[in-house]
Image (cartoon, rainbow, N blue to C red):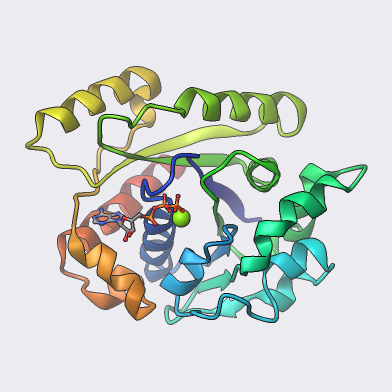
Length: 255
Ligand SMILES: Nc1ncnc2c1ncn2[C@@H]1O[C@H](COP(=O)(O)OP(=O)(O)OP(=O)(O)O)[C@@H](O)[C@H]1O
Ligand SMILES: [Mg+2]
């Protein structure tokens, strides 16, 4: 059965999608079978994997709201073992549609993914920058959360709200939910500010903070415009090397 992991932080632009896509790619290149679910109406994970159409016929929206089987929405990426379910701009309306379901509105994604769970080692959900019903669906379906945090002054802002949402999901919907890792992104080890932020984050999350930090690296920002994970775009750049090392650390903590 797949381990389902959400990449979540309600703060925007902190590296959720970049971390989800590139960690998934690094794992798939090690032979793990990985599925990415693009759960954000911005469709960034989909385009990073080569799907630039923001209204594909079969998407996670049709899985949630039109009762399409999850297996029908799965696409292959350019990496063997790495599949994805694309998003669509329609997903922006899904929160409202889901909210009208009387019973089980938080479990729609979990129910849908249960049909395909055995085909994968990992299912990574790229969450939107909000804590609405989509994120609650993702957290309810997941056994763990990876929180990407950008090493900047406002890094910890809003984190307590997110931890509270995780606590509530754990209490009422999914007792197994844990924060399994915190990844520092756009990290500059020479900056005093980044070190200060790291100290604060270590106080809150302790050994759940990955030793591997992701540096700011322009190649990571360029790769999505070619529809490729960084490992296929420039596997020797600092960003690709960092996500590759993160994959090793991630796997060592999985045992
Ligand atoms: N380590 C990095 N170095 C340089 N640029 C990066 C790095 N990580 C992410 N970026 C760039 O920063 C921007 C935000 O990253 P990303 O889309 O991964 O964040 P996000 O948290 O998923 O954003 P959103 O909340 O909008 O979904 C993107 O343009 C991305 O290419
Ligand atoms: Mg994103």
